[in-house]
Image (cartoon, rainbow, N blue to C red; front, side, top):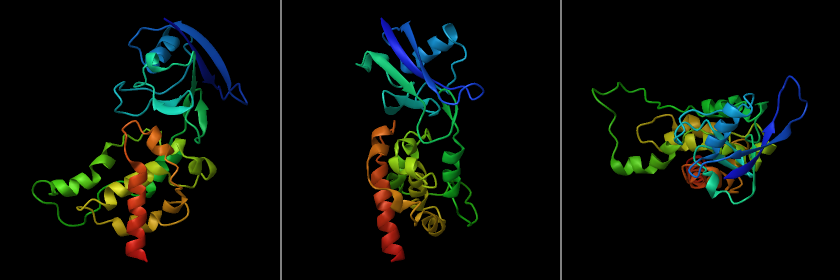
Length: 233
């Protein structure tokens, strides 16, 4: 069947502002939006630029805005889109590099700031550091994050204040603060306990709607707020 794709285009060497280009292509019944973008790039316009890698919803690199919603283009089936015209935009809130590609460095910097790694100065055991199933269950959902940035770039607080850590970084902080094997919780709570951290979140729930892994990010941020209040005040 034929479908119409309206795709945002931007060439930094030629354009001051972006524009849209329309493609009408025949798509197969099982195609995803990423399959359609590949068809356009490979057979219609080789200059179209976007990120993609695994095609299985694991790497997160193909996150983009489709008909106004942040999604993974490798997961969204074209047949599931009822609108006649499929509008494809880059993620919002991050500097635009070209077409559908944004600069992820501000997103990664926020992750670095919350120290996204296990901190434990005790001598390592012969095998792994043990953790009970109940303790792991507290952080299990947070470990599903694939760092696609769909949540952070859907957040109005991040759009308004680029110094805001954003939901992905706060989720990563939660993942280690509530990890019973970690000893860096105090440092991380100092990092997030400010107006550019926890208290910039206004519980809008955009991050949950955008998350391709259905992580309850807002719940994790709420638990962080409770922990900070109980331990600091």
